[in-house]
Image (cartoon, rainbow over all chains, first blue to last red):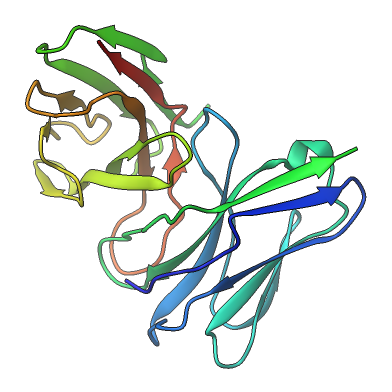
Length: 111
Length: 114
């Protein structure tokens, strides 16, 4: 499974846009990039998944450049409730649906 | 409501005792997973099952055992052989087969062994 590297922590203020970048230099052709969010003492929650270019849903956007060696999760106009750990994962498109969680990025949103 | 449940939320045991953590899902998912999370760390895979009566070891299976007798249930037993069992345990489920499917997580069980 491709290893991912992301910042350990980030700070932001309410109303700002937050961009969290993840590098995955060894991503394979059939791998997808997936992001999960985890609040303290809760299970992670799926945010968004993409293969290339840009994906947008009601909570976030995911930008993936052509070489796919990195990706950026964009959270528009964050609020205090977005304070959480965000995990970038590379998921193989094959049987097993295995996920490998790294340490994640701890986002702190301040008032 | 469809979802995945874990019980109990908090569990306390004495060292040397086996303990079983419950995980139930009504999402009709074939695949189920058990993860362990230590403070400030990411999740590590203990065991996973893609179909009833079949399961495979994950990255840290030593000291743990599972069973998958029903599609809805995937209990995890933490045995006395697990050297450092105190942790936050998370169960998840997903569709199975070819593809990258979202994993749905339960609320977790925090196990403390003294």
